[in-house]
Length: 68
Image 1 (cartoon, rainbow, N blue to C red):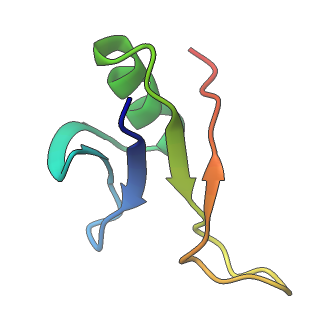
Image 2: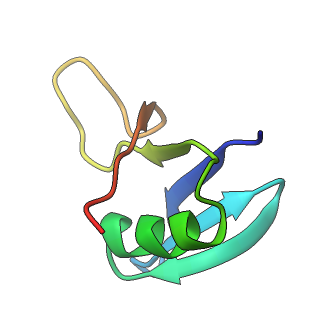
């Protein structure tokens, strides 16, 4: 079961990537994740951290549970 990565693009949109293929696009992480989850309901979603935290950078990933 491959992971689905939710990445922020320079345009501000979010893309869902599975096996190096874009499967969904959305204006928010949640919207993009819901579209990806509808296509592949059993695959885990990992979202890119999009803010700079005190102890983290945007290049870290976290498990994402969309509110669809």
